Image 1: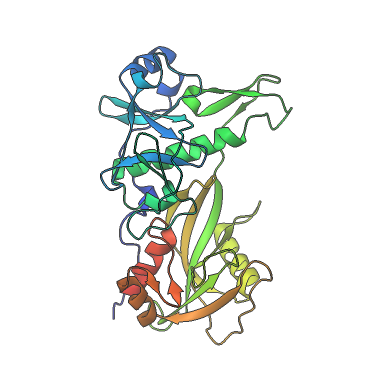
Image 2 (image 1 turned 90 degrees about the horizontal axis):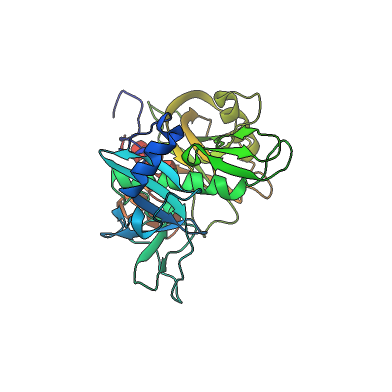
Amino acid sequence: MTTHPFQLHGLPALSRSTVQRDELLRKDDRRLDELWRTGQVVLVDRQGRTPVRDGATGLATRPTATVADERPADAVLLGLDGDTSYWAVTAEEPMREGLIAPPGNSWGMATGGVSQAGEEWHDLRAVGDLLDDTAAGLFTTASGLTNWHGRARHCAKCGAAVLPVAAGWATHCTGCGREEYPRTDPAVICLVHDGAGVDGENVLLARQPIWPPHRYSVLAGFVETGESLEACVEREIAEEVGVPVSGIRYLGSQPWPFPRSIMIAFAAVADPDHPLVPADGEIEQARWYSRARVREAVAAGGQLPDLILPGPTSIAHQMLTAWAAA
């Protein structure tokens, strides 16, 4: 058995990126117009899906010229990869009747569709782990920004309509002139183990009532105003399953743009003999699973008859696989 606490095995799926962000460039309209003419567009529909290629390992981007000759006001600059600029544009694409399941063993809230041109469209939760590093970063940023623009059409101060500025990275209020920037809501996610040895031999998993049967995951919750991340871990686990924790330590983080979160991962220790009290209406069931059982589920592609692990796009999946392998 290892003498060192477990760590995540590399970057989480949606933390990967290769494109360069440039805040100053976003305010250079002349340069932005030049980049638009030779760029590539990531289309995102109202369900958060984009066309994919090569078994969902890449994005089926479009040359900007096929979208518009001039840079649209709502086009969002995702970043630069060498001499190529990447943009996000919200689009409606008619889909054929009948939706398709995500490829591989991914799990997504939204099921994919097939366009009239025969392209498969999938959402980020379904294919994020399958995408290469460049595609994962582009789609994650595109999802977050298009979600924000779709939900923030009016000024939070005066209620007037807002217009996108800074290549989609801010909005300007048409009433009071206030500038607004994309929000990110921090949420903690914690793998609680029993503390036996270095990383414990049992892990505490729970399920929400709305999840598919037998799907379990580690515990998570949003950070409240004026609360530290560690205090949030203690509070959320106590609220959700009635268990006090100790030994809280940081593991890593991953953006989760559904619609605007970042998941901040921790590990902690709890007493497996302490009674579990699932939060009414929020946690349907909580129970301890052995490392051997989680390893069995991982080896079976994440699914056993009575235990379905989180999908591989999530940081929860990476936390559990890293713990199981320790």
